[in-house]
Image 1: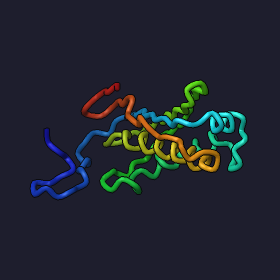
Image 2: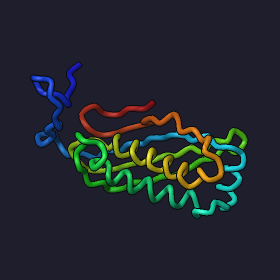
Image 3: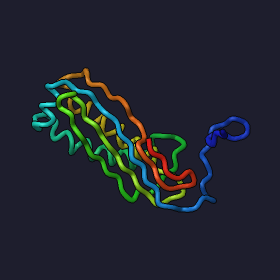
Length: 156
């Protein structure tokens, strides 16, 4: 397997995608945050002093996906055609799951954008709820699915 982010001398480099075909690409990522019963009740009851956790985290996740190339040094700056952040809750287990779907028509994929969207949304949930309980655990961030590009489809 060849590592594409290194040149022949082992120096880090951005991958040249100028000769690749433009195609529709989609990626879906997810991650979870485990919270206490008190945090879950506050989030679901919209009683968090900083505001509506899901709305703010959704906007943060979308913004994070859009700014991925500012955060990850070798990522290409790509034009997203869509970024969507959604949530599922399991109050019994104290788990909030975040999903981010990123789409583009480009020469390179959007996996990093979907993952960054998830991370940004999860960190926002933590930030908004840390006054209630700092023992939240962010975990299990991973790519669920990607389509498009030379490597084709991937499903976790």
